[in-house]
Image 1: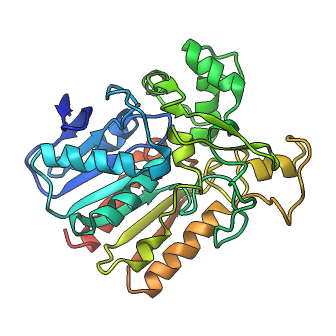
Image 2 (image 1 turned 90 degrees about the horizontal axis):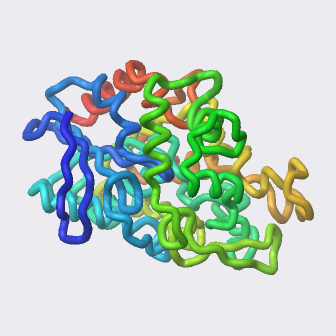
Image 3 (image 1 turned 60 degrees about the vertical axis):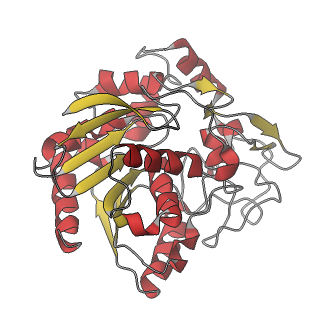
Length: 347
């Protein structure tokens, strides 16, 4: 495995790479508050005859800390990945893409922008097709006209302060170490790479342009709405909608892998305003008719079911005993599932 910086013409991207020059090629796209380092346990598990590319997205890790245009709904990041592949002279050919969490939204946007360049999609606990927060049914109906309850305003101020301070403590319940071990993984799992993963979280660009993004107020409960800059706003249903994949003329096969104990992407996520309101943790909740918990998994299943009905191939795998990061929590089993899918996809 090697690491290098690549000037894509849009930005300088840090890239982890394994099996350079080999076929097939699998592009690994990380999620929010992470970097390509979270794929290293999986890369070490996969056979050496695969070519693996794991870039750090803009604003994260060792890549340039450039602003994220939230109004493009992750298209900024998909276009960055395309520019990287062009710079590596890998563009204009079908490649396999794996996207974890927000990275699932990035690769879904990628196939909408560059459908002929995608041989298959592997969605790992992906953000819902209708974004994160602020919708109330399987169709992605917004709870309010301005998508209140989504965007940068939903980030815990104590967590953001700890990130800004580079807090590596074990005592702070709102600190990045505790958040990672509570939400990225299914407790009591602790990774031997914990310090590396914590460092990756702390490498995030903390600003209104990157993470979490600019805040915006709303007249509707819970009184925050998405702004126009930053990753958490790009994840808002105001801007992110990858459900049009059902309309693709060429539909690459999809593998949907999710952790049985995932708390971040869930039909009852403790990070979702609707769920927190239902628990009484955000005062003034208007009730289940107006603002229920977002059914994130059910929304994904609905869209992928339509994709299958339209002629696409979809395989759903639920990995037992793991949370939001199955490729970290159980790399051997994850690699087995992944390789089986790639063989079915024609490798």
